[in-house]
Length: 327
Image (tube, rainbow, N blue to C red; front, side, top):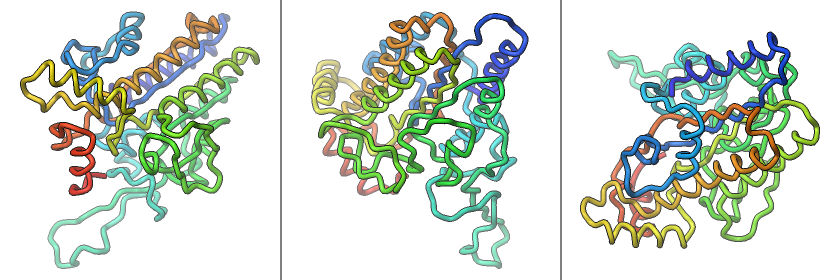
């Protein structure tokens, strides 16, 4: 989905808030990470991966068939979604929001030989705090704002709490959960929101539960909310719950044929991500908020490219990741 399309939709919501007498709608903006369009049931392209909750979201709303991400990697595409700007304007070229170096614009790579006839540029790594964001716009319209999940646009003080959001969980700059998707998650951030979890719990399951608490609190307060729920999934490292991995291993064996698009671990991750989306949709229904909530779902930059999709098992996938330079 084009970020311009998303920004236009959210802008239309804000226009409606200022011009209509009706109760302003809540907005839930869900963004998966590295999810390919053909790895969902939305377009009828896969008979292997299962996304029943995305499918029901499609059936209740609109499906976009000619819409694209603003950039092919994480941080720039997220910058565009947050600001509505083309990422190159701010020097975002790489997935660099997790690095320690603070750069607010692209800069020449100092490691390149000065005699080189080609300029090699490094990406910006931060977004200036004064940059207007969609969260700022919603706050100005009287909304409460919340961010759940993967940020990847900079460490403090360039985090969601300094970019227009009232809530940020788990408040991390990391591009993936450290140690993998299954608890415990040894986040190094000193100010991280501690996530209660049983050993082996998937971070997507926990993040959905934390987001549900927020929705329930907002129902009680009666204030409209704008919530970004940006999944960690299905970014590497590829790791899924054992029962789901087994389910997709059996499914792959039953279907046979080309295994390139029948990855058991990836299948487990897609289903867990979809279940998290379903948890949010169920809560909106249960709390009586669904009819007055706009839900937008997209992927940040499309599917993961690489031989990982050919790995027949979780062990083989981990071996592939250890031998690659995938980031």
